Image 1: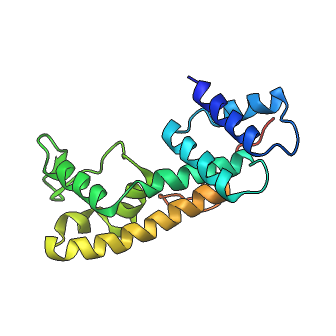
Image 2 (image 1 turned 90 degrees about the vertical axis):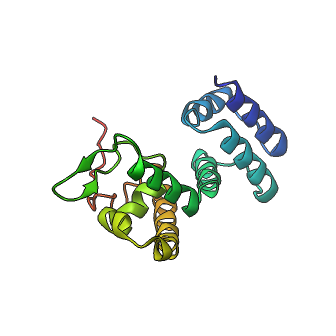
Length: 174
């Protein structure tokens, strides 16, 4: 499973031969990049090899991976997913409020942030003629916020407000 990460680290070592990379350092990279999508990691390594002068940090690789993954998302695709969810058979509809309940699992953090900014009820009540334009504007804003969170503090984005507008307290190692 981690062989793809080892292969990418070998590519980086070959591209940045300034100093040897210790086996212990390679093990830390394998561990820290283990949750990254293999295609995104490959693209990140390609990008870093073309643009950087020195062997990248783990944070640099994670940031480029996330940028690549977010680059594969689109406002139109997210809107289609949400519309299918809302109109889906067995969607959790609340007759009191007249809206379908929010998804429990979001396909991506940009969609979740965009819905938070746009408003779930507003999304369901919007005229389709105007929804596309307004949704795309808000989705792009959400994408920027999610990328900023990822760049500042990694995937958790602890430095900026979360979608619930709460600043989480970082766990302190004991």
